Length: 459
Image 1 (cartoon, rainbow, N blue to C red):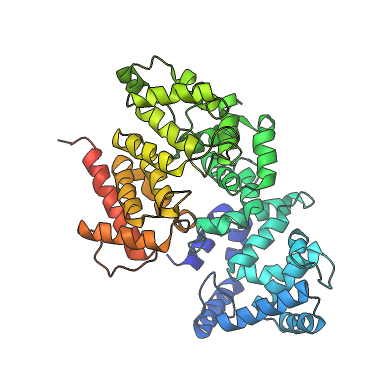
Image 2 (cartoon, helix red, strand yellow):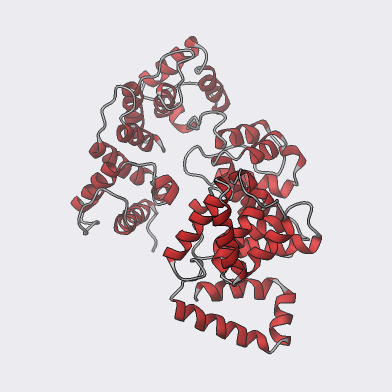
């Protein structure tokens, strides 16, 4: 199915007025055919600039930025002329100058904020499948000042934007407000779109990870004001994560564990590994899960508690070793009680990984990749540890292959990982110091092979 057909299908099944118009108006088919032919002639792509010319789109971006950022009247005039002539990309960029929700990005714009005018200008781009126009129009329609009809249209358009094949997870950065609005649509029976609480929870958690302040205020500080279905969705989303999995109740009620987990997602408190009761029993720590969690939290501010964690780690307890890795990590320890120590952090993480701690290998890899503190950069060591992480937890590949998370690793790391996978016969392309499609595919194959090996055999 083409992306254009995917959006059409989404609206067809979810919007009865769209179906009625399509069946009742004979010209609808003609318009679609004309649009398709125009797209072919212009050699454009669905979700790309509607003119089909990247060069022209870049020129229009420059004009918009000059008009909005420098108050350039000539640039505004050229942009307005293109919009008046029916140039869709010009209309979309002119709309951003009128859009009250992004007015702060254009401090010297000469046109007033005008919701109605922006909505009108975004419409053509949205109908043509331009992702920017779709997102911006949906955001405006979902403002509280709009009508119920506007809100339902906004919900449908926002979902079509998110479902679009060209929309990737990293595109949520900058559209956190729209993602949070769509999450509310997905738990509102009056929104006009199918309800999907779990997807709503995933979207909100994503906005928290992006440090979106309104989400922090609304869902961390004001969690108790929300519907149980949405609270449960947040609990399920956090329980499904690979790193720092939520282990509290999943019942749609507000618990201290739920709020603490949301704070961790938003970066308001560090992630600490969940204790492994069966491993503690083997090493004889004698602590319950809650007792160890309290001890780990106390160790961030109390040297006596830190010494107790160290004593448990000295007996080889994987959870305690991983906890020490977090406590000494220069990424988390700001030196308020005791100094961070990258070497000590990495050593504890490596020992924890060797003992089977779930996320420790990835944490050590990050330290070696960044060369944090006094620890020298070692991309080969980082790559080896990431493969160990995938052996322990094949699901970690979802993070490693994510564009946003993947961008945090250095080019040297990607080259080292390609060499390591090539040595195992999984990566066969030339080694290059960058993230590419071939290494992503190799990571997935490696993870799948380990997942298969970990699964019990079937008759």
